[in-house]
Amino acid sequence: MKRLAILGSTGSIGQSTLSIVEQFPDRYSVAALAAGRNVDEALAQAARWHPQLVSMATEELADQLASRLRQAGISGTEVVHGTAGTVACSTLPQADFVVSAIVGVAGLEATHAAILAGKPVGLANKECMVAAGEILTAAARERNVPILPIDSEHNAVHQCMRVGAHHEVKTIWLTASGGPFRQTPLEQFAGITPEQALKHPTWVMGRRITIDSATLLNKGLEVIEACRLFDVPPSQVRVTVHPQSTVHSLVEYVDGSILAQISVTDMRLPILYALAYPERPASSLTFDLAALRHLDFEEPDFQRFPCLRLAFEAAEKGGAHCIALNAADEVAVEAFLGRRIPFSGIPDTIERVLAATPEAHPATISEVLEEDRRARERAAQLVL
Ligand code: MG
Image (cartoon, rainbow, N blue to C red; front, side, top):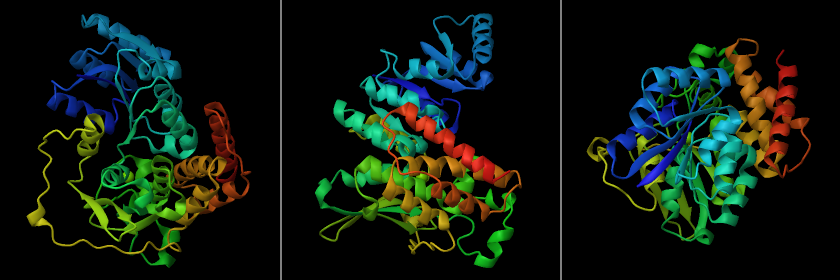
């Protein structure tokens, strides 16, 4: 029985993880939940799963949850809050596996603490790897702690990497749907509205990641994530536009073989893979191969999607540049959604923040967070 700590339990990855626990009650149980701001959902999850520990974002929300648990006659669940509360969840001695699915750098300290405590991590939070991948992977290697990617592309790469040696890998190919503007003429990019950008062709996701998919910045973050997770230089990672999103990614070996992973576009599959690794439990997530007609692959257009070029440049420099790329993008996306900058203002803002960022390699999580704060300030001044 694996006892899980789920960071970000009320978000979509958190809820999908709980549905896996529901399907495999003899394999998984819930030890701790970091539930954020949704008290109703946290209450429902605590009533259903009886975790030892639940963490809420603030003390006020924690008090609300604690009193509603008492009213409902639910005992045995301790309620904590804030970053310290999330860290308490990720390091709970009774938890054997941590699912890291808090969006943004908010989950960074707890993920790092889980690795330091020797707990295997299923990682759905890409900002952690982008901002602090060098620190997290070094800590994981030192303690021999597996980091299992839940992001669909990296999960696919992880699967394809199991069949060959690291030195036999020539290229990691990350697939990209290409977003809604794959075929939009370049001269129309300036007039793209938030409503148009929020329509993603294949995945239903949060607002920031949907915009990041439209600019391909999301794929850029995934390039950096792949470099850190699989210990390869950016020159060994390439992006291919694959509109069907059927092949989740590929690994090309030096002998010329290319291995691809195909499955339904359902996040429960990479979650189950991470939780069960190195086993493969039987599931109902079958792919209808007979219905498959086309697999198209094309080169990404770096001119149309400058965010992808900026991400490769940041990946080369590493450290502070990766932190600044992520932070500046988050600020720029908010400004675009608030109609303060045009669509093309997103890469412009990132490029200017990167130009003002020194080449540095933060060695601790607090230095990473400090660099993140500085980059956000620089970006905020540009999008006023
Ligand atoms: Mg992805």
